[in-house]
View 1 (cartoon, rainbow, N blue to C red):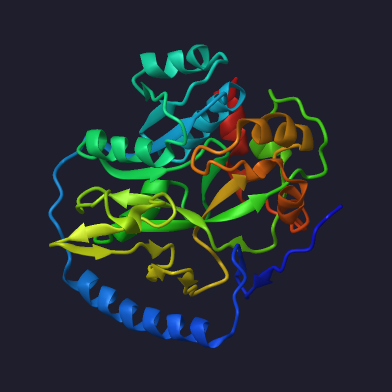
View 2: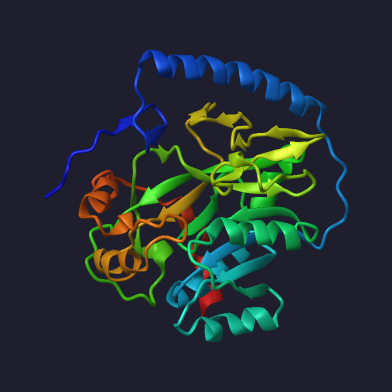
Length: 323
């Protein structure tokens, strides 16, 4: 049985947490607008000097038993301009080493064993500490997330517009099962799943500009992949979104219905992949496994009503790379 859960939305977003037009909400909105003016002023001043670095864009990910999906995820992101991958193995017992070996040999992947429980933030902090001097930008993704440049064909071409921003937030476009109960996991995820939410999720992932400092111990960095606070001259600065607007407390200003970039979040894949794989693994951040709830599954699935083919301009390149 599908349990009803209130879903609120505006012109551009579907909100994970329902918005309420009460006094507390209006007060938070007012305070946020004042803070945004302050941060905009700081960003006018901030322009730290960057040093020459080995990579332009790298991705950091922590994974467990994702062997069937790793190759497509890597090959796709190489096509859209990622130079290197820092992959944290979290107690996998599948054939991930065999899949990753060619990329390790080619020095495209750095593999780190990370045998801790619920260690997503710990892995990200480790990556920042060890590798921030190697790359201009570090993106924090999961293996079911694919960055899709729409206006551009390269992630770096997009990020170059944000050289004096500490981090940039890209929004999720959430994909469901596309009506598939079963699926051959050797087929492309990016080709099999086309039906998504008609609007963007207010949640997204961040790319960190490493010429800015960062305080990973700050309470503001509890979920740094979603809301990444950089630091300039001792001042913590929240991310801007893909339209260069301050993203703070879930208040995200959008300047156009044409988003220049998105993250395809293949949240469920097929029904049996979701309940047979994802729900069994649980979450690398939350101790409570909310994936096992069918109401949680249908809360996402029942919003998938529109075809999204933005990623299809890369599919031929991806197929040729995979073969």
